[in-house]
Length: 62
Image 1 (cartoon, helix red, strand yellow):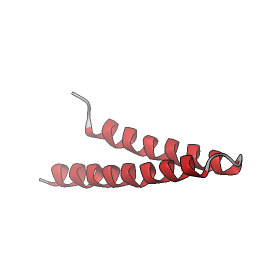
Image 2 (cartoon, helix red, strand yellow):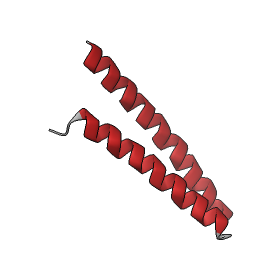
Image 3 (cartoon, helix red, strand yellow):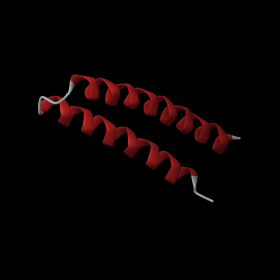
Image 4 (tube, one colour):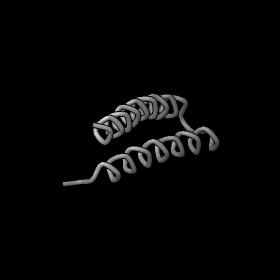
């Protein structure tokens, strides 16, 4: 089974990768629609990461 530390790390890395992809697309003058989709995906992944982190903190304190 995957440890909770690994899950949190994967979630944080996923957020960072999507953020960087969105920033690179905007800096290169890429499609505004793609940038918008990437930023929406980033927000969703941030939500998932926060829920996961809070779950791990709760689980470890129990």
